[in-house]
Amino acid sequence: MEIFKFFSYKDILDILGVSAIVYAVLYFLRITKGIQIFKGLILIAIIWAIAFFLDLKAVSTIFEKFWTVGLFSLVVIFQPEIRKALSRLGQATKLSSSTSVEERVVERIVRACSFMSERQIGALIVIERKQDLEPILEGCVSLDAIVSVELLITLFDPLAPLHDGAVVIRGNRIAYASCVLPLSKSKDIPRRYGTRHRAGLGISEESDAIAIMVSEETGEISVAVGGKLHRNLDPEGLKLILFKELGVGK
Image (cartoon, rainbow, N blue to C red; front, side):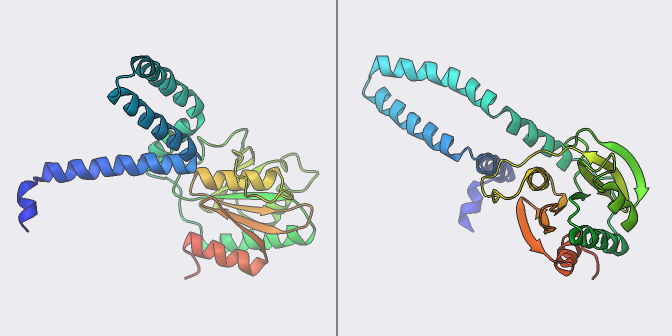
């Protein structure tokens, strides 16, 4: 085609690079709910351009000062989100050392959740996938134990010292217990759900991990994947989601 005669491979790479940056900025704004701020900045830029072309010196001077202070303010406002984004970028370029979860391990998780659901024992189980969760987790107790139905139930027993927090499964082993997870700030979570569900949804928003929650009030089983909450699951429904997301049982 004639149009490609005017472009070199460097031009194409340049266009692709700009496209990737624009996409990353728009994606960041979407996940941080910053799109409204972005719209406000566009409006301010339009007003500034009008003032510049009309040669309104006082208004133009005010806007010039605003951009200096405003950019610094945005960095402060979005500091947590920027930190998380950089953490994700670092994790995306890091090869994960975790192994895949075997079918027998999934079966044990489902059986343990079914037992706890019937007896309304609260639980929060996180299954690590490609992204290393250690930079996100806090207050964990290292275990490195074989995944078994009995151990999972014991860890979440209300009288057990490690029941308050999340259990993290890496590969086919329980890596950590009693972990503190980042809480989701989503306003779409029903009010009847508490900290456990917000923590499960939060870890799924900040990583590719799968979080399984068992409600101690109702015994309801929920799964959070990719920032989406699957609610009111029976053991078979839980198994189907885990098999699909972990690529086992095929």
